[in-house]
Image (cartoon, rainbow, N blue to C red; front, side, top):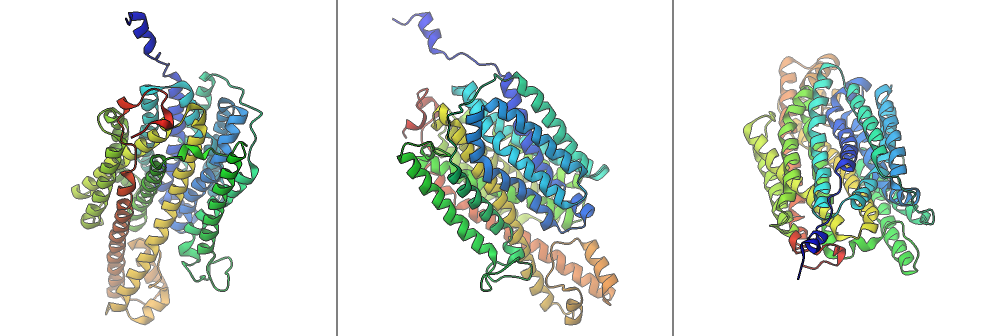
Length: 546
């Protein structure tokens, strides 16, 4: 007979939520920093006098550093102790925000984001490991969900505050907020239980070099496809290989090094030695499907977060505050969905939620491609952003939860490392690829329109290289044509009209391509776990079956 005491013994003790406050702000720190970068594009372009695609390198630098170092960071955390190293890198993150605030050139900004990324490479697996250490069962699911909501609320607040400050004061005060957040997280870290780590853990240097080099080459390759040439080397390429651009070469070599990393790690595991990351956490098709889903949704989110500010600030010439207003519906939807999706885990399986979410993101992107205009604040555009936000918010929390709950507690650091690598590589590749893609599409659309327009003679085109333009605002184009050419008012109006039409076509094509990428993830999402959370016995971990 089961007694009341026996029943109470079966109920897990509820842990304090105080550590979660620190974890929440730790996620807010990283996410606010990332979200503040796109909304600062216009201010940095004006401040440093560089092209928007150069400023986008700051976003890539952050993601590149995280993705390249996160696996090494995970192993360092296990060796040194998660609390101790978490506290140290929070301090270095604060130092990175100081670099952003005082930066005299875009090179300083890139260096600041590289330092922030190196710090986040340890914060990312630390958050996962510390959550697994402090929470179990439903509390763990809620804690993981709170990290997803922290990303969303950070994005929403960064766009709003960054837009307001960018319009009234400038982009630098936005990173004063990042500095304040770092100070708060550093103070809260003293509420965590101290740990000593395990000094006997061996760090696989060969694997760290292989994966780091692979990530760097992949990101540089994707980021410079447009600048260096998709196949044949352009004049801007630092070198060429028998006329071939280094960008595709970097991508191919990066893929080869990534395969070498997997082969080396498996061989090391078979020999009984500790790997840089335990690949057994991806031992089934369910976990691999979760990582693929995470990569796709984060890449699309990064692409959208780069595209919208680019068009509103640079193309339309509107203020950062206008950008924040345009993005609030999307970020608010992501925040609410990330918080609420945890509540449906007991009714619907990850497979059902994931498949439905990717269908939503695909439909939303197709819808946006057909209804979007040069005004982002129309009802139809907001509706598309909201629907995309529902799918994106559900997926980010869902796939992270699948990975955390499928692995034993002692492998939580490995899960965090894989999550960090996938998310930040996806963010860097998504930003870099959409930038290169949009510029290429814009160049093609402008060249075609210029060639067919009767008001734009070849002499005018050659004077300003009009058929090889980057993203420029109408006012900048008018000024360029008026001061550096002998164009008439009628020809200037025609050139601006071509610029507007070409940019809108480019945006529509870009959204359709993103919709196609989203659609490719619908079938893999059907390989996510088919269980409902109430069917999983406590501690089942990766052995749970469909």
